[in-house]
Length: 115
Image (cartoon, rainbow, N blue to C red; front, side, top):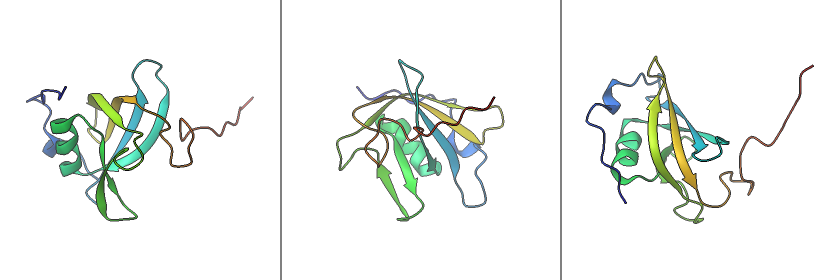
């Protein structure tokens, strides 16, 4: 099912950095687990809103990538929210398989506990 874009969510009103990008955090919808962080430009946000599939901008490859397009580890986006400043996004997703390119469920596997 493709989500209906919210007419009030305008990618052009976000506060992009000097490279034209905004930080996007992907979070599993049912557990709250933070899966990964990636970057989006206005076109990636538009594509995500239109298709319901997480689409990011690859800074290293200089191209768009739909999460899981080649691996099958897709992120179906259920909700896109922006913070109060409009300079960060939270994507609530349903992740299929590992989210991290290393093959782990989350990119946030390293833990350091502060006392």
